[in-house]
Image 1: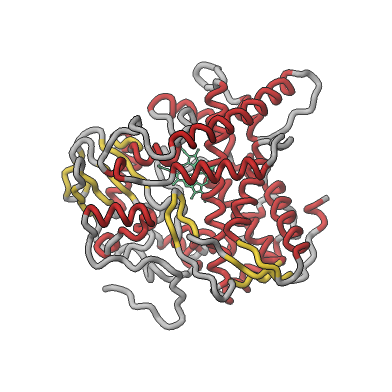
Image 2: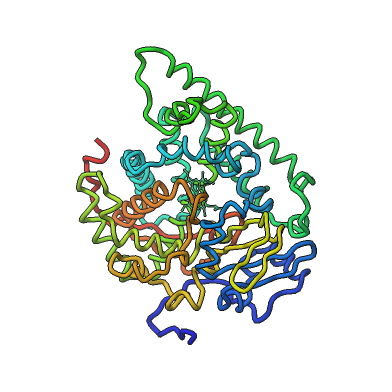
Length: 471
Ligand code: HEM
């Protein structure tokens, strides 16, 4: 039976599912405007849906067993499809997000230690310091200042990555770097007719020349930094920075003992920056927006932050239980990667469907996370689902903000730790009120972001920062 929301339930904004599937022309228009507006009601209700596109078959899969088959048990049969590869990893062809087969296996093994629990935990202080610095800037703006939370979160997540990858600085203007990142995302983010018709990525897409210029800019900066770091690492007696770049340069292939090529190091630095920047920023922006609509959860998060933030930083994110539940609920309602897609290499069976070789298989966390058969009150904001006592009720493969299986996000613990710590610091120090005229609307443009930002009024709560953090 379909859920009917009660009066106390907060249902955050989303496009209403269409009564019927759109025709091809309307689909293209909607895809261009906002892919979230393409989904019709049946997708939120049916386990698997078959769609006939002009040159291929597509399946949208919401059935946990079939998801497990595509992303885990039979993952070898499902390659990242050209649309996803072009969009998520354009230009970073040698990085972990893009490589396939043996090359992927080797890189994944080499990169795993960079995101181990211990290494990620060692970045907690950098994350805290970045959050406190942002909070100091907001304080300097004066009580009642208005900020765009979405833009501010994009800035802080880039700062955190810059600090954890290049702890001795980026050596260039971070603002220029950020604006190049924005150009990059602006150009690669469009799913157009050429993609839907299944034309190969080699056929030029609009904006290609701009993208190449931006890539040239990134490569120049990163190569310079790598070169400088290599010299520093080979100079005996000099103190070595302990950051992701050093770990990347030291990483060895366990079977051959070889390190990564310059192209691989550069591509992976850029992959971490691009894969970890907008995604985590959106998780934070949505969390802050959702808290602004829920006095009860805001109070819980503030009380928890006051209690935990002055204690030693070790395992801090694990103690911020309510804060983390809010982040996880934001990732459910607004998963930054709204859809994953794969191409079947050989024939397969998914549920009652025969999947021909070459078929496109889409697993859309945005749809899956709001599926009527898998979730209780799917459109309602309720972080309690993610509290330790309730979590086991969530079916495995029904919640996939970071994907699952061999290609699951390598940075998931980094992202969850960062979002939890930053959210706690900001909620401890400020009351953040949404501007009354703001229209918050989810839009999928590579990542699922607030379409026109999140303007908020910032009022200091007067809490003092723990001095240990900045010592
Ligand atoms: C809230 C933040 C994040 C979200 C929602 C997210 C989501 C995802 C998803 C869904 C995938 C799997 C794609 C697929 O299966 O096709 C993925 C892969 C990946 N992510 Fe993340 N990510 C986040 C943060 C990060 C961070 C912080 C980093 C690195 C610093 C990162 C690096 C990567 C890489 C390298 C891959 C490719 C893994 C592979 O193919 O082996 N991500 N991410």
